[in-house]
Structures are given as structure tokens and as C-alpha cells.
Image (cartoon, rainbow, N blue to C red; front, top):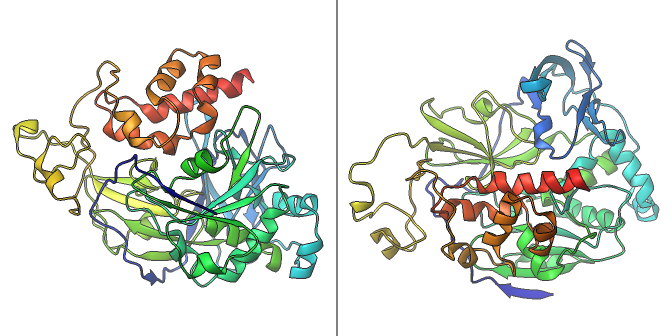
Length: 447
């Protein structure tokens, strides 16, 4: 066990946290599958508009790995297929019929799971479209079942602004979580690491895994930070990671033989109403989750405000998302701007008087407070990234497309969410997450 205190970082204190209370939500009349949720795949449809599906029916697969399938979470029919530029597949909309019919897969007892080989379990999970719940570093791709990862990480904590509490997401399903940990251990000869923010009842109850405690400001809760401090990734190595709730869903799938269609998520943000935790169908429309929230000039985000994906009220809950955040757009120009004392302006540089109130929260909007300018290095990146790398030089090596230098500066260690805080404090207003993704794309293309 390791107890690691993170000192570098910065907490973005935003109004609008979800209350720790679970509410019921009527099942959605339609759901959506969004291939862009899965980085690194080339989707190919298996069905056409108007065709019927059951929960667990494969809807599309990856051209490069045909065994990797993606399934419908409900029974019904394909209502619409939406394409983007160059016929890129954006979403598949499925109209739910309410019959709850499902594809049937093998139902494993706990004794059978103990004896099962990883190849047998992977085959079942691939066929049912459950395998994409397991991802790998580097690059945050869907894991390859043929790999033997260096380690597997499960994060039971989060420090991202307004993020869902993993402990609340698995509340009442602790036995399934323990079973999920036993299942995932079969895929590696190395250790399974579970990270908490503090000692609690679940921390004491879990068995057969390496348990750690991380404390400190954001990004202390990021899986990438945990990996860096416990099992750093070198060239050629892979580390898997799974969200705790997805680990529960994997265990439920294998013990029931049915696709696990439901997940718990939360609604947060200063512009959102009814900010609670909800049990919802995978791919539920964002509008269904925001009933009571008036329409307006708002930003809808699948995930947290730093690393989440831009959505719309007509969009769907992302496959890996456990949070919908709603904040105001910041289109209005500000009178006097930086000249004001800034009692209500949260900033990293301590320019404003708001920094005199360390526990105050703020109703932040999307205003960048400046425009794009030349990339300057102020040393601020190193102050908020608790990794033994040089983030500014790494970003410049990506922009220069120098693969050898990227590798030497630690690109295999990072993910976009680890650099999201850098984008927030960047005085040059660069698209840092886009730069990181372009580096991943280049290395994967040249590999």
C-alpha cells in the first residue's frame, strides 16, 4: 500500500455540485450509440435503419479489430443513423420498444468464474459488446484482450470539478465490485491497484488487491497520476484501467447473461436544475436528464468541465460519461476586465482578490478571458502537473511532430485528461487537448 500526497495542482471550485441523493428516472424512449466516444476505432455498421435489435445485439464493430463489437443497450429498432463530414459515423439512434427483450449469453456462477480462463471470459465480453469498458494506457484506447498488461488500475476517487463520486456510483453493489476485481485479475499476472482518497469502509473491505491513498488538489484523482507514481509506463508497456461502475457492470453481465443496460450518473453545473444522481439507461438523451432545466445560452458537457466532450441538449449520454455538466456560455464582453478587483474571479495566478477566499465556489462560464497568442512558457504548467516530465517541451515536440522527442519527454505517460488543467491555466489559450490528441494520432499512424 502507498500513501501519496500530491502537492502540485489546482482545484477549480465551481458552483453546482450534485447532491449525494439518488433519484428515479423514467426509462428513455430512445437511446444513442456514439462511435466518436471510442478513440481509435473505425466503425462499420452491422444493421440498417428500421431493423430490430435486442439489448446486447451488436450494432457496429471495429474494422481493424472485427471481434470488437458495440451493442444496443435496449430492445427496439434503429430509428436513425447520423453521419458527419466525409461520411463519418456520428450516432445511431435506437427507438426503445419497452419489451426489454435481450440477447442471452452464458450465465456464470461464481465458482465457474473462479475456474474460467481469461480467453473464455474475453470471448463472452467481446460477443456481447461489454469489452469496451476496459481501456488501456497509453492513448486511452480500448484494451486488446490478447495483451498482458503491466498492471490494472481502478480509481475510487476523483478531484475533477463537479465530477461524480465513484463511491456513490457503486453504492449498494459492493459485492459485485469485489467480484469484478476477481474477474479483472485474471487478465494480468501483475497487480490490480485500487486507489482511494481516504480510508473508508469499502477501502477496508476490498480483498486481493493493492490499495493506495492519494491526497491533494486536482489532478490527484486522475488515473494517469496514479499510474505515474505507482507503475510508470515505458515504451512498449501497457496498463489497463476500468471505471469502478463498469467493473460492477462486467460482473453483472457475466453472472446474469444479460447486457448491463443501466448505469448511475449525475447532473451538475450552476445552470442545471435537479442536480442529483440518477440511474439511467446507457445512451440516455441529455434532454431527459435535464428536465426542469430551462433552455438558454448554455454549454452542455458530457463529463467534467476540463476534459468532458461538448454535447447538446439533443445529444446522448456518452459511453464513458458518468456526468452531465451544464454551465452558462460566456459570450458577453466584460467591462474593465482584468482591472476590476475580481472578488468573483477564480484564477490560478492569484491576480484577483478571490484568492483570499480559498473555500468559496464560483458560477464560472465558458469565457476564455483572452484570445489565442504565441505559445509562451511561464513555468505554470510544471506547478500544476504532478508528473516528472516537462509538459511545455512535450507539447512543443508534438507541435514539431518530433516522435523521438515526444517519446523521450514522456508522451506514453499522459492522457488528455491529465493535461486538461494545463489548458485551463494556459495564458496563450492553446488547444492543448487537441495538441495532445494530434501527438497520439501521429504515433499510432507511424507505429
